[in-house]
Image (cartoon, rainbow, N blue to C red; front, side):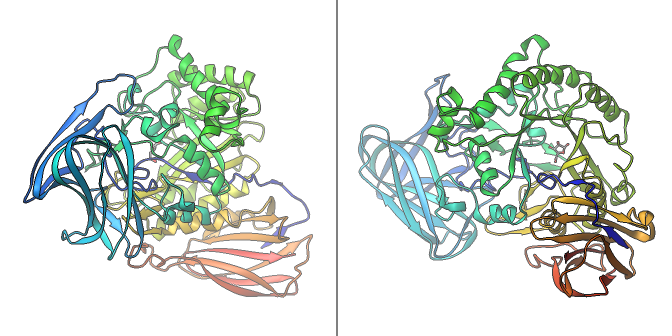
Length: 629
Ligand code: AHR
């Protein structure tokens, strides 16, 4: 097996391997967004969803009042009458399938409140599954006008499925709103922050880009419920709650309490991208609701506000702080531009309605912002006619990047490792925007993140890498899933209220991303082998920063395969090569909370003799070899 290092085929795009984020499977509220209180402002259509009354010797009454102010995002609050001089009365919040508390950690509670009459004190109590107290704080002396209050407590024990009880003590009437509870330990200790364990997993991948906020969620079930970025920026309390597109019965999973608080909004996504060193890639609604739901489209003569949203987003991300949207970015704490370079128009759309709407965006954006590369959609069926229609039309427009989605069985991924080998080198570039091998069928509840699926994806990814001159971006999908609240499987990272783990697919993504190199090299003499003959798939890159030639091998067979690698045009400078291996002889192996690293990379060294590295590729394995030259 020979790698030709004498000439660079093409640069590998720094954006080659990235992340697809969608608020599906409780990925944002209940997941990445560290808020622990569900329905914190009583704005879900059923205002007491997530809440229940509790009594301990006292009496009381709760009334949800609605100011009816059509211009306000947050019109409801709770009017609470307390008659509890000799006992307590209160409200309890269940969190997102319970609340996770870690022993010895600090939790910050906040509330907006107004005293109407009497004297009422609030005792905040964290409890475990059995109702036993594991943390407590109090707030007293509420003023007669709306004011924010805060209190913190440190937990005495760990609870995976705890809740928070808010006990009102005394006699009187008090009004409350915006009840919030965060762990102090969020990513970079930011208030209104993100779960640090989940961001850490993303950070460790060294992703080239982050696509957000989806997925079908961009489209919404209908246009009223589409994702609108402007409703997700500015003061958190001014962001209007919206029904999540995945608040549906989907493949027998029901999550009727799935709403978006937008505490995690576009500013936070841009900040996340910056934190993990990734290019931000926002995707905007193109004037079409999800084609799997209502199929609602906006009339062509009503498209302007949608296009204006795209223009304003560029101003929000990159504009001077003297501009309207640039100023908002600065007011939110980020005067420097976010340096937006890519923007997607429409998610997974494909037909005439899409193309005619996309054309309008394309014309305006290319004229006003030629510096922004546009991502256009091609649909969900990579082998079908729908897909071909979008490609043909987008080629005519000389589109920058086309977003292909592939959800299929593992065999499809092996068979398509050569998908781009004969691709038109002068056409639009490819964004493999969503893909995942499915063990049982598309998004079925029995699907698991097995090694069989991860290995098939790895083989396919060698094909993407071998074609890095045309494939400029790729991302597995979906990214996150809460074990007790998901609609779609498989997913890259699974979590509960306290823990998270990367799947075998995660480690495949991470190995490619952290070994992406800077320049594509060609592999010689065994061209049939690198495309899967003898069950071996391979690709090679050079990394200018380290001087390493990096070769990736997938051995899809259940036998070990002996491979000798030599490098043409460069000389190894060390006596050993660094080798990272992911493997399992059981194709059904999965990672879990009990065994989070059942499949995780192991590292070893291989001798370099006479300029060659001899390896025995393990059965069913992904092997990454770094040879310093
Ligand atoms: O990744 C899950 C869904 O799959 C996405 O929301 C959609 O784009 C695709 O159909």
